Image 1 (tube, rainbow, N blue to C red):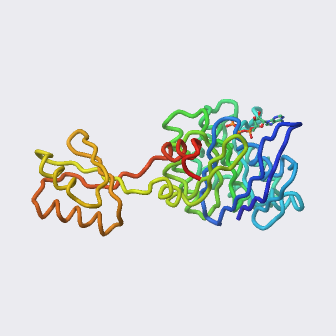
Image 2: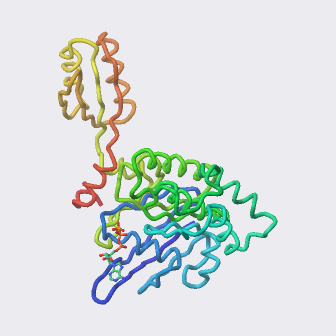
Image 3: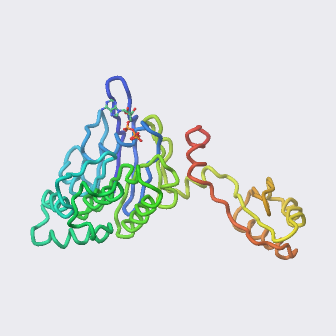
Length: 308
Ligand SMILES: Nc1ncnc2c1ncn2[C@@H]1O[C@H](COP(=O)(O)OP(=O)(O)OP(=O)(O)O)[C@@H](O)[C@H]1O
């Protein structure tokens, strides 16, 4: 749905993005992660047809970003990192303005606006002036605006920036909803926890270079050669810990409150055997679970050059 080939952008001698190539399949939620100034917005603005490349090419929904920008604009809903709203308008007028711009027939506009207001939980604000909305509501209104023409692709540059934790959660829930509706979504953020449980794939960019990209589970597996299991005991941990230490696949055991963290080289069958042995030895267990790495772990390892 989105393909970028060797995108490069320079400002004078400064290279903002260096030969970036990327593919995002239909229905994916791609998290574009990087610190401030990494090149996320530059790449996004190129995809949104708002910035010319120094070299390179991209397609969105099969349309060339440089060759057919109008077709690309019809295919995308774009939310910039800094957005303005027209303060003198009411909420419905603001959306109507964009609906007209996207050439939605007059007869359909009312229903379309009702639908997006409903989806964004803004129906009760329909007749309020835009300048009276809170920041979170303005952000939701801007998202609503990206949806009026029902685009298959959403390109969202830090859509939850500046929001309080509750409003962030609401944006996250909404993103999940939009993905269920079949949208392909590219979302940028430098807040990793924001993306960890919503993305299907991620790309990590730093100083204009895409360091790593791929399905999120593959990326996690890549950084974690061995499995990590978190084990909790109901009583005395010693018998269980001794048994775990004697397992030939166990590489390390780190004691924690009420249990331990086990590093194990092996597959599901090896994990299953260890659990079976603990249960057979009547070790009291309250928990035995895979400990997934966090997106922070991935980011730190990738940006330190420990994984490529
Ligand atoms: N018009 C411009 N002229 C000169 N340099 C620019 C211009 N636009 C961006 N840059 C530089 O290009 C680099 C990448 O900027 P970009 O906005 O793409 O980063 P970003 O990853 O989106 O960061 P942030 O998370 O802060 O939005 C930065 O060093 C920025 O200062």
